[in-house]
Amino acid sequence: MLLLRRCCSLTRCGPISTRRLKVAPAVTSCAARFCSSGSEDQSSYQCANWKHILAGLLAGTGAVLVYSQHRHKAERADVSVTITEKGSLLPVFSQDEVTKHRSLEDGVWVTYKGGVYDITEFVAMHPGGNKILLAAGGALEPFWALYAVHDQEHVLEILSEYKVGELCEEDLKKQQASKPSDPFSSDPERHPVLQVNTLKPFNAEPPPEILSDSYITPSAFFFKRNHLPVPQLDQASYRLQVEGLPQGVLSLSLEDLKTKFPKHTVTVTLQCAGNRRGDMNKVKPVKGLNWGVAAIGNAKWSGARLRDVLLAAGFEPGVAQWARHVQFEGLDKDVTGTSYGASIPLNKAIGEEGDVLLAYEMNGEDIPRDHGYPVRVVVPGVVGARNVKWLGKIVVSAEESSSHWQQQDYKGFAPGTDWNQVDFESAPAIQELPVQSAITVPADGAVIHHSDETLTVAGYAWSGGGREVIRVDVSLDGGKTWQVAQLRSGDKGQAPEPSPPPGRAWAWKLWEITAPLPPEAEELEIICKAVDSSYNVQPDTVPPIWNLRGLLSNAWHRVTVRLRRD
Image 1 (cartoon, one colour):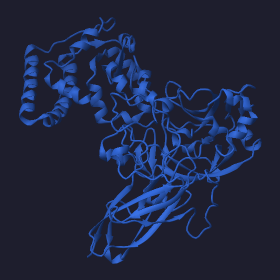
Image 2 (cartoon, rainbow, N blue to C red; image 1 turned 60 degrees about the vertical axis):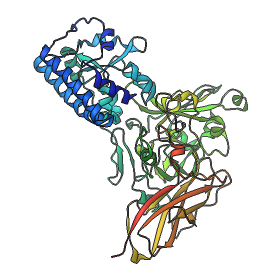
Image 3 (tube, rainbow, N blue to C red; image 1 turned 180 degrees about the vertical axis):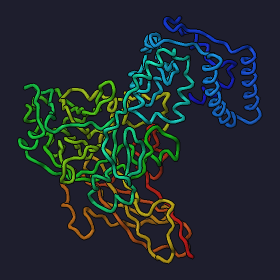
Image 4 (cartoon, rainbow, N blue to C red; image 1 turned 180 degrees about the horizontal axis):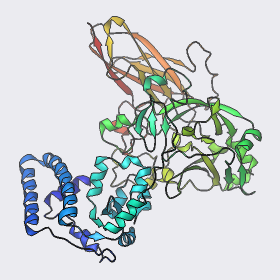
């Protein structure tokens, strides 16, 4: 669709879309006005357009697209000059007129840095779903302050295609005077070793080699996945509401969770649905944070069992006749007051073997703010997106959570599905994750000296749904031959974790293998693949599992190293 727009823009003989101008109503207050800069400017603009068309015929579409990007930037600069010195070629609208366009029926208009944009056509293509409608009729700035991923050149270029006018000076000054404060200013400090994907909201992973250093991932190095600003919560005033059961609402303080319910500790690996998305991006670009292999971590979580809390709130066998889901709502909110939310199946929440925790400790200490202080839900074997942090509400329901992140995200699709045809309602929400493994040492592109004679390869392996990893196969020659790695469930020199009961293997395995270097090789392609207790194995390549959001990336992991002889 964007490619189509680019081609169309090259053949237009005017700077604005006639269709969009026709739907623009007469403007009051600031009065819509057209201030032509003269026929000479207009004819030169048309002439420039024909030059671009001719360039396309001579040099091909690819060259035109590159040329178009540079031209587009220049046009935006020219518009700024015409506004300040010659007058704009686009109509000027009041905020009142923009506000009238807040629905798909009336058109969806937004403002950004003084420009007015009709994004009606783009709503269906928005990777974030209908959340874009929250900004309808108003400014994008407060929302982009929360979702800083939008502050990228390609996003601004897409937005520029929908420009229909300028906001009148009077209303622009009002917007600038009420500029929102930075909602991320109170976020906690983070360890400088983390590799940052986005600062606002903060999303980062550790260097991969740190993961295989320790069976239990230190909280400072545990990957950080935030969708919204980290809330500042006081444990004294904290309350967790449990709703949806016959006896009414149960309100619990942090002290209640610690004193009224037995404390349980479970070692659980959490993995972001987008872990290893970078591998999919290499095949074909996807929408989402470009995670490497370290959006995963293993920790000891302690707290009250969700099952015990639900029983105390009045859960009884009859509830299972109508209830199907348990919803979670966080205390992190966007500018509209919308919280992060998710849900899991009721049988996972209430089952004795589900081991779902309302955790208030991580690795023996209070949960850090980035990881959900004072309470988060920990759902073993399930995608990280359902492990809601800063937990404020639990609802037993016949329905899934209506949250954007349950309904319009974190779902898998076929490789051939694109943003023009994707239907999120057609796919179930991701719960259990597939078998996974990755190489943490050596790094891709590393140089190994041949005098070492042997090479040690290390990494992690894990599978969702409580399925234990039973084997990791490693190849040093691109998959021609394979060797079995040594697995461990603890740190070197220490006693391993007890073997889990069948179906309750919630923690990863670290693995390692030391093998002789091939004498004549100059380069090695190292591959790992894991097998779980159901004999599920990772797919060998990315293309068959590629999807537009880059989720569930679990193909064989490959790194290439060079051998040096001098």
